[in-house]
Amino acid sequence: MTTAPHPWRDAFLAVVALFLPVSCLGCGARDRPLCDSCRADLAERPGRVRLVGGVRLDAAFEYEGLVRTLVLELKLRGRVDVAAPLGRPTGALVRRALADAPPGTLVLRVPPSPRGRRRRGFDTVVLLLARGGVRRTGRLRRQRAAGPPGVGLRGARPRGAGQKERTALERVDATVGTLRAVGVAGRDVVLVDDVVTTGVTMAEAVRAVRAAGGRVVRCVATASVES
Ligand SMILES: [Zn+2]
Image 1: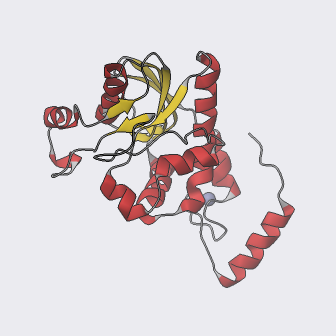
Image 2: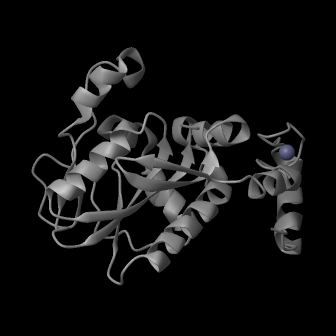
């Protein structure tokens, strides 16, 4: 992928940099949050394909190095300026999944934990998909205890101890039944999340859609660990 010239953007950033020096999150060069060279490096990275809950998962990136840094800056420090280089290939994967799927296929995102959503003030997956040009997510809802009926995934991620402190089996146990899909009976579904590590949450999303009579045709993530 080549980077199209953006003379006005470059000029604008150059002026901004005079007053607000920023450095590239990838290489530290005093430039912008992600320099052209690191951007190009990112664009050339191969995606990942794995199985989650018996369904093919396409991830735009492996969750390591620069990608991990960018995701954490976005999720933990609210650096929305790095969403575009992560979101564009994510959106492309969703479009490809929809092109392979029957017409009328729904795109459902895995909801963030209520705590994460509160802390950030935005939903990472919605932002990534928007940057990737996927906006057909209006009917998707974060789960609420007593929300209105509609199409979407509902449910909270497990409370209490963080996932890292649990054993793999405890994580699976604690996750099953935490998500609920509404309005998907007889429908084909593409599921989207930002990061897939153990795959427990995505597998729960697949289970929830199936339990509600839907069919998951593809899972898409921005980044996945190598499984
Ligand atoms: Zn750089």
